[in-house]
Length: 78
View (cartoon, helix red, strand yellow):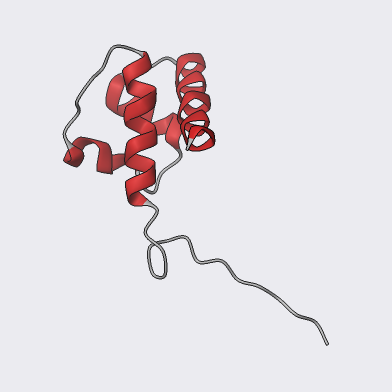
């Protein structure tokens, strides 16, 4: 018999939104962008982070990927 574990990370069973918002703000802080309102940060929930950094903050692609790395590092700090 095969056993499977399914992880639901789309907000049905767990709400990962708060962690995403905090990690994005942490990354933005590194670029001198402080205290963004929650409604602006909430746009990052769902689409790929690098695309959101480019679309919403005008980051060039390389900087967007650096911001994603910074964002991910936030989760390792906690």
